[in-house]
Length: 441
Image (cartoon, one colour):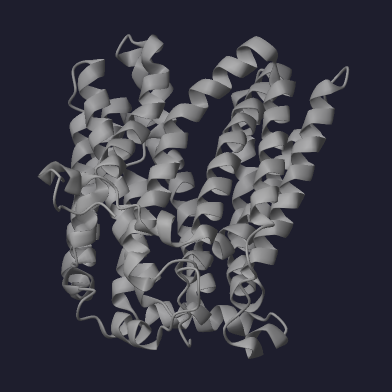
């Protein structure tokens, strides 16, 4: 744990708190398996659009992949939330990981064929989105069962650090591998990483529901309604979802990057535009030790959302590529801060029996926001120009976050030292071995 003491320098308090890594072997397994899987998945996410573009020469055909992925993610993500609260979360994650490995094998076989077909690419993209929708709520809901309650903030920061590091390094590695060895090698890398991840996840102990009665009932819309009703009764939770939606729908201008690079006469920097946000997030994650000393999580969720909007609007004013990259990196760092404190609110205050369904709602927002953002940015850019789309999106995020702060004061006031939901879970936790704490609910 990174705290000051004899022989420690004050700046060391900025380093990430690694206590969850040391206290829980299961957390180490989940962290490592996720890093390995994410690395391989980036190879596939890079290879599929490239194969479609080479085969069709159509931007519309490439864009259709997003449409194929969105609906399964939304529908199966909601059901995955119910499943995470009813079933052994380890079993759900392991089963879906095996199925995802099978899809990678299908893509590899298709790539090695004399004339690769298009339909397996779309089929694999849709099925992978469905499987990830089933898997993600269980993955997120298992973390509070793996580490002590007082280490959840540090665990979230370490998971974000993993995402930032892979998000920065993997795209470049995938590009080099595909350019030199072809898309077949990219799918082979993805398959190999899945096999490693499966071996790691198989070592996890079972994570069965803490309320067995839930597991005995048949999944029903009533369980989804129960989760939605719980979220609706918590304006602080509603606020965390809406701030995330504001940031991704208004201030995530990924669809504009190719045109922005052209406008700035910097086509060589397109890769830098894609990685700038991840670089900012990585810098924030690498200096995340301060987050353990923050208790007003809701306030930081709102402030970070405003910062994302302001940085995106500022990018529209940048006269050169380096100014734009700096603004995007600041936006990425602010988004990381918001994600970290959002996760802290969710993990510390939502009962275990509802955590999966809450994660399903989060997945729904996470899938809808970027899709809406691409549509908004592309439409405005076509009509009013690239800079106008950037500027209006950033300002909308900034103003919208301010409106949410005024309309949902419970989020601004949220303090994990005094929040009754956090207190109830903290009071109900009991040691369960290996850093595990099991709330009664």
